[in-house]
Length: 331
Image (tube, rainbow, N blue to C red; front, side, top):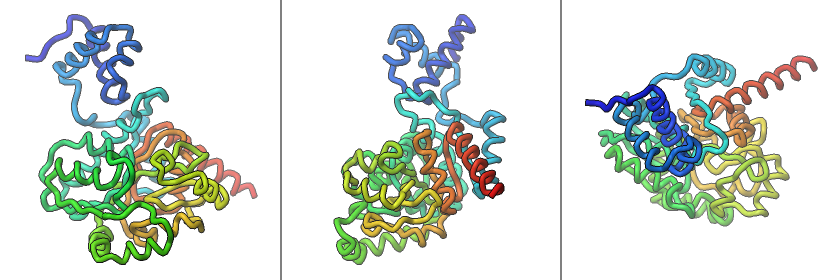
């Protein structure tokens, strides 16, 4: 029998503690400080939320205003799919958890549909959280493959680790692309891409029915995970500034209009080309206000079929889009 809270206020407190823990990503100490209770009390409140049946892997449904916002973004940007999550506060310990849960819900439904035979994967924190939130499934017939170099310095975020954990959850067949995200030179890239083992994996990746990716801001325009991991340095950042880069998708840099910029870094990226990706059903998982310009740039590229982001980003993108359209119409 489920435990019954003694008062309505206790139930509300339990729900608030559960939201802060599972959606906001707060630690027990942070929740205790925010709710003005002890850490032991936080533990009991979260347990109560479980007993009330309030805590599930996914939250089914969306508020009406989010559904309307999804429709607007989908229609304006020419998307086939758009999923929005409520924005958490800027001081949330791990805002990617919210996006990761929504992405896991979407991926679970696509895998259960049996329409995905080859799943292509990018990299990043949101995709890592997506795998964390995905329940155990039986997808032994699905091949799971990276669409870019699998070797980066931080194991928890690289494409191979994402696929390795995904295979553990689903029983799918996983593949490794045993090359770095960026080669040292364009010539090194050509040599690595010509390897038989790389060509074999690329031959599978190009057939992906669904490709899940993260999006990145460029240095100086928002937090750059590539800079954090040491994949880019200050010289790279300077060259990206010079060519007007505004977004990164799968190691490729685009300008504000969604066009691939001409820079040496783009010549060193290992993985599927943007031309090859044009034929993929790409769904991006990215949020946070510092990524607004990057997300808008990738939307303008026409590469995306779907977007999973947060409500604040969606509202800002629509505002920027309308502002641009207004200025264009008055010229």
